[in-house]
Each structure stands twice: as structure tokens, then as C-alpha cells.
Length: 194
Image (cartoon, rainbow, N blue to C red; front, side, top):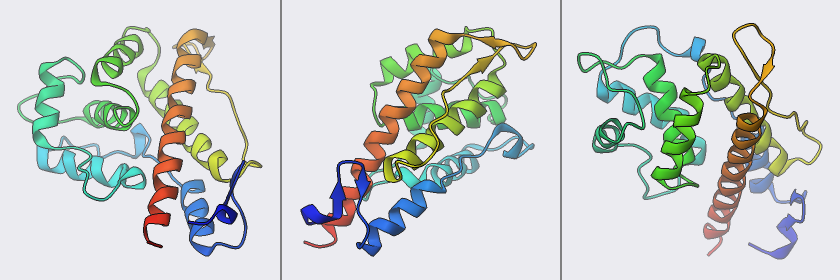
């Protein structure tokens, strides 16, 4: 990759592969709770769904999630245990959260963050959905400085603003993840030139 392809605020015009990556990252959509399957999933279905959802951050030779990882996360209390070997939407959302953030943070740090989220008393579905939107916006901004930069705002069960410290922490985590994904995916383009 030449110095001309990446500028201080993202990819510069003229490199078709970078422009395609920018379009791809600008259109990332992570399934919201209501978009997830309503039926309970078996482990192999869960692994497939999570891998597909996080495909935008995959790097060659790396497995995003395995059955062993899921079992370890359950044993460590990072995600809830399945019911009768079946996984619900909450399991899917929890596993997406963990698998995404472990790209940047240690599993101990992810567990601490997850504990704050689950102990917040906030609407977890809304919190998850807003965190997804924050990650999508952060990814888009890495490649297009003109992309909107909305702050992550959390709400309580009554729909009132709540948890400003947790909102700040989650926003920072999403920004860190977006930075890592942007760097990794841009470097992968350069590897194709070698």
C-alpha cells in the first residue's frame, strides 16, 4: 500500500479497493434484537449466525467464535448459560457483544464491561441496539469524516436518559473497536499488493 492511499482522515480517493472498503464499512449493519431469529438456536446455528454478523471484522486465518469459546464464556459467566442446549436472542446479543469486544479487550475486561451492562438496570435490548448503532456510526466515520457522529445515549425503562457513565464507556469501547477494525481491514488491502 502506498502512502497516497491513506490520509490522516481515512482513505483518499483514487484507490478503488479502499473506496469499496469505505462503502462496505459505511454500510455495516449488525442485527438488532428484533431482527434476530425468534426461535431458540442450537450451538452450531448460534456459531453460524454470530460469524455471519461479525464477518465485517474477520481477518484471514482467525476464527471469530467456536463452540469451545462459547462454553468457556458460559463457565466464566461472560454470557448466560443456554437453556436445554438452546440459545435465545439474549444469548446471540451477548455473544456478539463479547466476540466483537474481545478483538480489542481482554476477556476479563469484556466480562467487567458486560457485568456493568447487565447490572445497570437499563433496558438491555435498547442498550444493545444503541451500542450496535454506535459501532456502525464509528466504523462509517473511520472511512468518511462527513459521517454523522451521534453520541451514545442510554435510556431507562421509562425512556428517560440514564447511565451517562456507562454510555461514555460503551461509546469509547465502540470507538476503540472501530479503530481496530479499520486498521486491520485497511492493512489487509495492502497485503494483497505484496
